[in-house]
Image 1 (cartoon, rainbow, N blue to C red):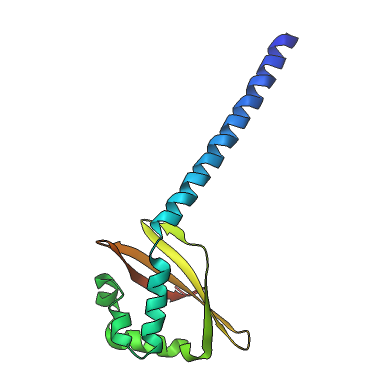
Image 2 (cartoon, rainbow, N blue to C red):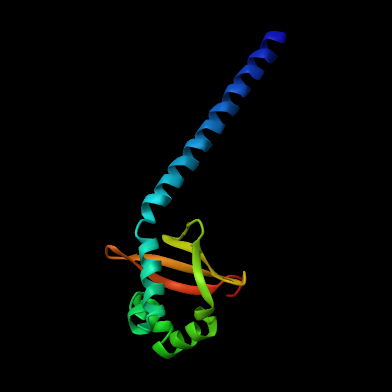
Length: 142
């Protein structure tokens, strides 16, 4: 009887280690997949804010998807940007990308000299071979 319990304990320990190893492998593969799939997003963010800062709002608007433009017209887009008061912010920092339903969500924090922060969630989708902005929202708003 003692031999059976030691065998079961030995086997369960090995199964637990195998499960932990499989989970670690899954997390590693998922992280690598996310990083590889999100390539090209940071240059798009930089291009978006460069266009807005230089007054080329129409060019920034065209970095969005057709679906976005069907729901948010040019005037609404301009009002949204104006409401953000982007001229107050001098620096931006990107967070970690998150995958959700084939889209990549990235929180971008705009930082002002006085320490104020404006976190925005950008949702990106691939349109053909290029990333496009599918949604922009303030963090904490719907």
